[in-house]
Image 1: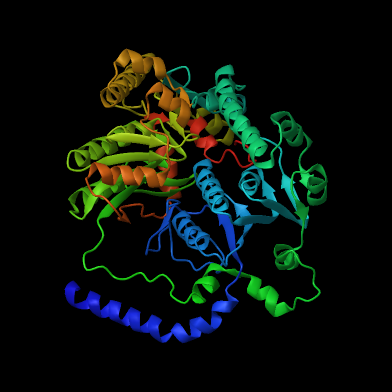
Image 2 (image 1 turned 135 degrees about the horizontal axis):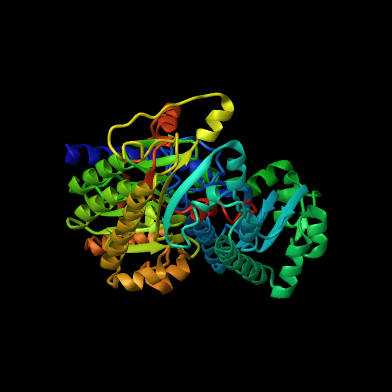
Length: 571
């Protein structure tokens, strides 16, 4: 059937473009000299024809014409424009850009390549933060609206310790941990933030701050000392930013066409202004022979993408109080489907998780290992793969992380909350009746008995040793070597590469090409997402499960750091 319909569809496409040729030829002269693009939100790497959006791949919501819908589409557009001698450059408008550093690096690289082709890039915004300003510095000219602001203030981190507060409420936290850098229990047990927690946060702050200074110094052609003085002088109004040399000028949105043309209003009517600047769809519509995506007789080979997003839990997962939860049942089902599909020649495990249940993480690890015995699996991280998230990635043939991704946190903790004091204050009286010495081990009506403490400590130690074994086997190291890197220590992608915890520090597209290379599939391919379906959040389920003790491979620092880098604070 495909051999019959594909030629017919291609014939219809040809006729459609042939019939539209006279109209396109008439509009060729009106092809804009500058093409307008709008960067907003968390731009996906690629687009897929499906409704769900995973932060990894785009959905089907119709944005305004100038909005960049994926990094892949932006790259294709810039490559097309770079070859057109009639195109002078692009206008890049930034509005609430919220991409991770990995995607920011892709945007900067694309803009530098476009400028290298002899084209001009003008960036404009009403207001930008550290992230947006770094992208603007990759342009030839950076402009702000007269009412705009430049929130260049560096980075801040706020760690929290609520142990004293819980005690005043009558709640006692009882936790056991393996690894002095496994600081999650400290949130609930200590009255103040520990020196270790401060050390971890400061190491990431130092890395990110140094990169900010370096990027701005390069983009604005200033010394690092001047850039540091800029940061210490922020935030800025648009006019003060222009006076200090942080931007190239102040310009109202309505005056942008005039600014791009380099001419005054005299001798230039409104129609000329409209023709001088337009979005990419307008540019394509005025090409004599626009790019046609012909249907293929043979479908492209497929690369399966399986996301592990959010806190790892047993069951189906779904939406939770803190965001998406990766249910082991759903992830395993997705991995099985990707493994069975013959057209999917390789798999990319897209990990964005700070960890969670140790049991659920190990279940996912085993499922990844089963798929990896059938076809190549690459684990990719652009935000965080810590603790249980890192455990899940160990089943892949290779682990790829971007330089500022958060990796590691090899450690374990377990515990529960004793709410008996709070219940007493509220006048709620509960009586625990058991049969069996340890039957009340998970109850929130009391703390742990001495015998239960011994059991919990043994379970935590056993889980930690199993974690070390998984890492040692996957990374070709000894348990002793991994222990020296473990105990909850958290690494950036760059430091994780130096420590041997990841194989490469490159981007998503490079990881995808590597997966297909291992599958011996050259050339183009398409992506197919498996899993990632959300379920409705159940408050009742959360409350019922909250009183249970459990063993966790979770990294609170990584969880907090996921939004780090855009002038935000840790919570």
